[in-house]
Length: 127
Image 1 (cartoon, one colour):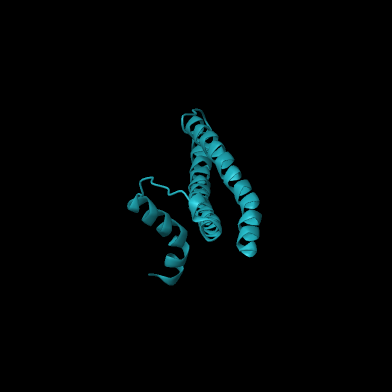
Image 2: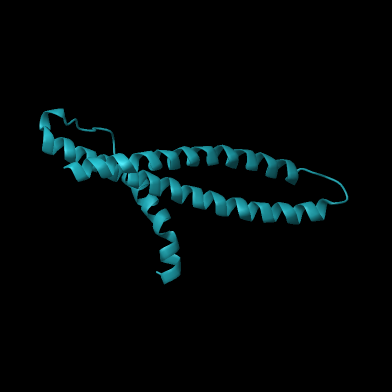
């Protein structure tokens, strides 16, 4: 029981940091989208150069966005595991303190998160 409590406690701090950084990344993604929009609307003699540069930025943005989604899903799964450990500890200590989470579970969202996390392995193994 002590191991469960220690592990769950020690995982929560770095996990919360990761979740906070992912939220910050979302703000940067929004800003990046605005810049891409401004560049795509630019005019002038350098239009062809800007168009090529914008295409490169769009590819980079798509890659970063994909990585961000995978990081979000992975962090959420780790967070669920930490809460499971805490729930297990509470159940073993005193089942009167345990409270059920009756929120609605969306199977489609869960499956999409699993696919996003496993996408790289799927592609690598050509499944």
